[in-house]
Each structure stands twice: as C-alpha cells, then as structure tokens.
Amino acid sequence: MAENPTPASAPTQCVGPSFRAVADKPSATVSAVVSSDNVYVLPQTPQLIALLSMIRNKDTERADFIFYSNRIIRLLVEEGLNHLPVIEKNITTPVGRTYNGLMFQGKICGVSIMRAGEAMEQGLRDCCRSVRIGKILIQRDEDTALPKLFYDKLPEDIANRWVLLLDPMFATGNNISAPFPCSSLCTSKHSQTFP
Image (cartoon, rainbow, N blue to C red; front, top):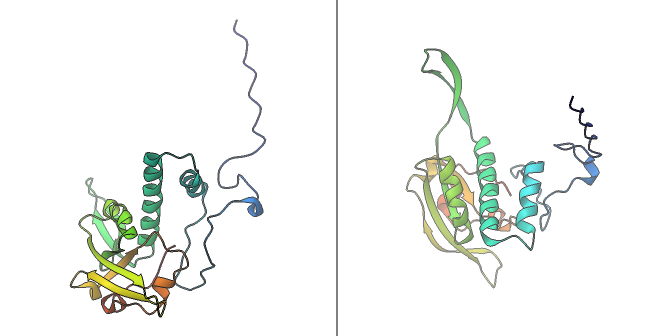
C-alpha cells in the first residue's frame, strides 16, 4: 500500500491581486504627478507590475525587453480602447440566437509621435485591423520650451475620428498639455490620455 504523501504546507504569502498589503504594493513611477480629469493610469495589477519589473531589470536581455514592452503596449492600447464610446448592437450568432453586444461608435486612428511612438504602432494594429496611423515629429523649441511641429502626416478625416496618441515617452505629459502645434489634432475627438 502506498503512503499518502504529506500535503505541502500552505504558502506563507498569498498570491494574486491581494498578495501584498495596499501600502506595500509596488506601483509604476512617474516623473511628476499628472493631475487631470482626462488622464488615466493603468490599473497596477500584478501582471503589469511583473511586466514592468522584467523590463526594468538590468539583466533582461534585449529580445525579452522587446517582448515584455510589447505586452505592456498592448495592455495600454486595450485600456485606451475601453474608454471609447460604444453603442448597443444586437447580432445573430451562428446558432441563431440573439446576442446583445456593443460596437465602437465612430472611427479611430492612431497618431505616433516620431520616433518613440512608432514602437506602439504594432500594438494598435494588433488590436484594430486596418487602423489608419498618422505621424508627427515635434521637438521642444529651445527659446520658448514649447513643442514645435517639424512634420505631420495625418489622415485627412482626422477631425471625424477618435485619436489614440502613441507616445511611450509620456513622462509628465507636457507635450500633450501644452498648446499643441498641430491644429488638425486639436480639432479631432481626442480627449483622453493614458500614461
């Protein structure tokens, strides 16, 4: 007769969203506190904190850094999409049942701030097929410290689209909150940012 194995003792620390006391939970750090009604910070989930830990580790190899950065970018894009307006839409399933679903209201596009924003384009394409992507190149004017537009290539109908501004170097948000040098973006439906 086989012996019953001794059950493993329970871990001293639980896992999951409550694996640490709230005061002890790590969170992403930002250069300065961004306080605005239209700025949202990704929820500090264990998954996000683990991904941030991997890309911040000095021993992480380049291929792993790219892989985990792309995962974070995709989470960010998906969270941005969660804030777009939707309308109800009833559809018929393959088995003939009605499903009360949702669909996005209006069109979207991405605008990447060159060059860093281009790293986020694939994450947007992975979430939204055939999405139009524009580009802008801005630099800080040395005299005024304001953003200065050097180049823009935007969808012609950008004023009728929700714009996902792609910029992984968000930091304080000054480029977005300052008077923006691209009037086409200012007249678009863009109204929320996600650092």
